[in-house]
Image 1: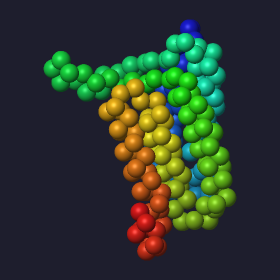
Image 2: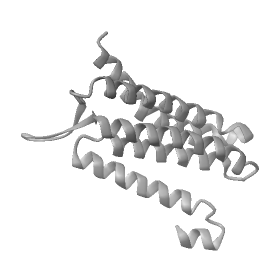
Image 3: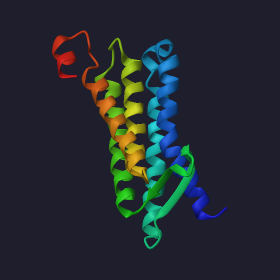
Length: 173
């Protein structure tokens, strides 16, 4: 396999692992109880490790940014929008920052959220936030960038208003 093939796998997993963590945690997290953090933390740790790989790859190949059109997203006649990713030096730095800091936030949240009734829901939202951030960072089109930005906004609303039974938190959301 060529290095670009490894990069395709890495970029796909950077984005998909937090999404998978969100879905699984939402479905089975409540039954996991105090261990509901295991899946989302593992998924975001995997994304962080792959973000380090992508950072290292892009700085070895500075002259050629990585571009990948993963699949056709919107097709209407001759109009076509691809779901694509681009990794250049700025993207590599942002992947490193978001991946590592996001992972540390997940680890910190294990203790911070300990004993909360919505423990699993909080970690599901954190993984969805990471998915949206990675889409935002890796987007190679304005439409995909907009989708990532709106996802970050939605997740910010969900996380700010997490304690919706508390009046001040719901008003802040």
